[in-house]
Length: 193
Length: 239
Image (cartoon, rainbow over all chains, first blue to last red; front, side, top):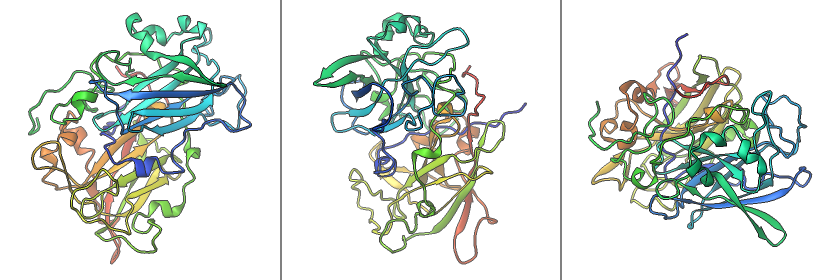
């Protein structure tokens, strides 16, 4: 079958914030009070090839709920849906390149009939200077199931650490720190997806 | 072959005939922000085949009228245009009920953003942003004014051709797209590094809208048509 040509990407440019980060479009807090799961805060910086902050990036996340179910019709089972949880987040970065989200730790989702994936969050990054967005995943450094994750195992061993969020405690809050390095030393592993 | 000779990187996400490389040195900002290491080919899983639906934003009809949605009661200055088209997947099926978010400069080419400080006049009645959902046929429709070209500091005497920024979700994470729509017969296309980073003439041509007189409404607005093609819900990994 002849397929139509996809529409090409272009950079998000420097002026997206009034539109994409307006009050009812940005979404830092994914969990409602009634959302089931362990509350976590995700923080990090987007950095460029000189190690400098990227203050005009857009970071979006997509994740399953705490049971391991996506709020989408393509995910039909067996873990429970949480109607209070969409699973989508959108954050800009500040002058230090920092972004943040407050969410619940995602449950494990299936890879296929036999294998499960380790808990992870899908991460997409846009910015001036990116002609196409960058795609990666956040994994949790303290998760034993990472060793068997079929997607993480595609990443060369020496680059896998760039996808592991570091657990920190900030008082009572569980914080996972995940820097996104677009280029250079410790460049994040990005996916061709 | 385009008019710009520059260093072009090998790292490309997606179809190499359609998507720009991350590194396109003529677009200066890519030099420090383009990923330089090979992308990882990964299998597609339920994580990639799902994505946020339209529920992430509550959209009103006013959101789609950029000539009047500044909240001032006034109307924006400039050539009133209707921009419409269909969002399709690569098999030609409409993508209904998906969110489009757009933003643009005003008729003078000035953005309402503190980082745009060039001396083009601001229009107090124009915010330059809108959103809408596609209908059951995948059709979107905005009423706006034609944006002006705007100067940027990429190289001496650099001007972006008139364009409207589009952000779309589509059925899953795989279809997520941020792009720009251009206008026909613009002499700035051939010397714009951002448009020229798109690798083939055919893919570049698809970013340029078409004047459509059947969309034009008498004594009201000129009509432009632009269809957008996203990866479908049955997508396979990039080769």
